[in-house]
Length: 282
Length: 153
Image (tube, rainbow over all chains, first blue to last red; front, top):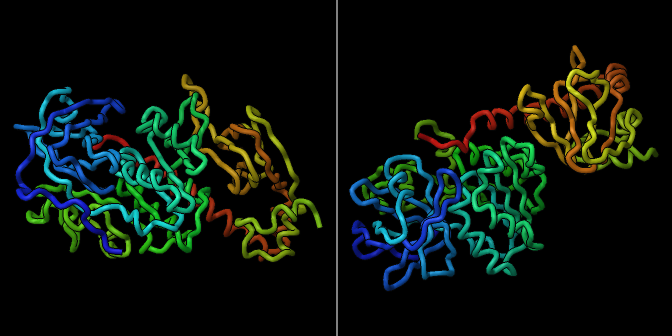
């Protein structure tokens, strides 16, 4: 399936729109969720898309949207502080203003997944770009068969959206398996890599579709394991991350093989990615 | 037919083995049950068995001075537990601690080894399966060591 754009970027795509920060929530030690006030026309985005967030005077970074695609009254972005720009963005307070461009990029194939089992495999902050897809699926639960979320984190105190995960685990129509790389004395759940959960998930490998997001190494091994289970590459979708700059496929900073990740991605099918995923230094 | 044979037949671990081979393996097995908090074996103990977990959760732990038990990995239904019986010095390298009530088939290591020596075809089939488990575990540990979720700075 080819990915598609649902929301077209603004007419002046290189022009950041100043947006007021409505709230800041600390998720983890280095990870924060910002809620931004929308422009007059609201925020329309598709699950998997990203925006370019601009910390004035510091710089701009691509951040996946982590909010509910059904709620246009706010733009929700979850940011991990890993450098000067994300440090600045995670230091904002309610009432501050940051710049926003987008939304950009391709979406998770939520329509192609209808009528199928859906396997969502994610690790670390990779849960954030998948949260809009999960919320969409749960909002339209009757359109999907078995839905399974497999989530891996470094440790129990680094589980992103822990309260929401707890809520999802309580649902009868969603299987949630969580593992951590390093447990502690209080952790009674699985310890091990997220790929070890795949054999415990309930899905039909002949027709299931998988959404995968996390560190690239994790995604590579997840792809291998799902293919070993019989899920073909045309039903495996990943969210790729590269150094995006313009966000609209002009500058080439995010080129990965024949793709510009900002325009052709970030969501790509593994069938399209053949010869790219396993190529070094690309 | 034995109760253990009935349990083993159709399990992914034994896929591809003949009924006769599974029957031989089953003869070395017995059904066991453990309750939460129990320990199946301890690091340094004599490794005289291995287990196929049918249900429940088992934690492989290593005792670390000053930090208590560190969980290295958890095993669940369908997983194989224990390979220290394969090679000298035949001592467990972890504690196996029950996290939730567990049912398993316990295999007598001496019987498995004797059966494998007597029938190298069976031994090869078993070794293929144990090796696959070992490789998968090693791969998982390697990914854990990479600490892929740490903050990239």
